[in-house]
Length: 83
Ligand SMILES: [Zn+2]
Ligand SMILES: [Zn+2]
Image (tube, rainbow, N blue to C red; front, side, top):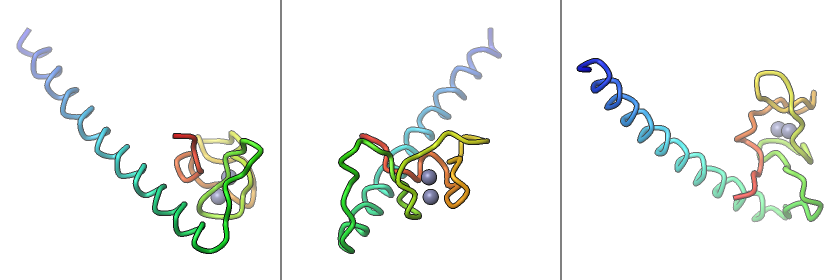
């Protein structure tokens, strides 16, 4: 019982940390998008999920949750995910 109580607390703290990470990635993505838009970039009208770290036009599921495009290979989170 003691054990699961402390585990529950640990899970809670982890969840809070991951929420913080999500927020950070979210604002990082916003900043990345703004930076690209300042330089003439426009969001893909075709519902693609372009990469924000390279000119990859649409995320492609690849190994290890990364983009499968050879020229990209950035993580899913580096792409312009729908909010
Ligand atoms: Zn990509
Ligand atoms: Zn990329």
